Image (cartoon, rainbow, N blue to C red; front, side, top):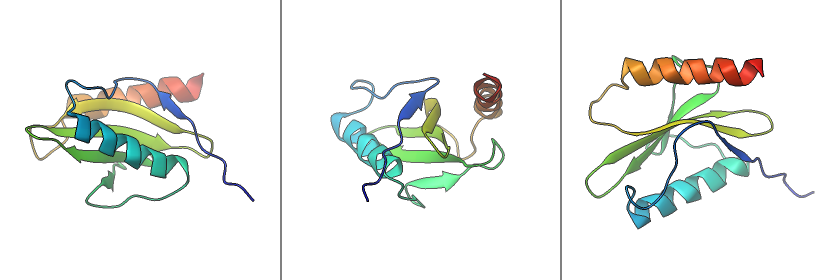
Length: 110
């Protein structure tokens, strides 16, 4: 039986070169491909973000001079990308968490 690939649904952000380096863009694409085929990612690539919502995670991409974070949610039928940003502190900014919660609510209400 062939596995069904989950589509990526982009609510915000993009991954392109620049500002991502070519290698960071390729790494992000590879990791999302694993998620699309049903693989589970753990540290150091991804960590759960229950403070944003159920099944939400933070993908971690270390670039040449920037640390990128991609907030996503794993649904039964898709991978929902909520935000792409460069992370400058240890903690995810409250503004990012709040905007991701808002996007999830709007998405679920549609």
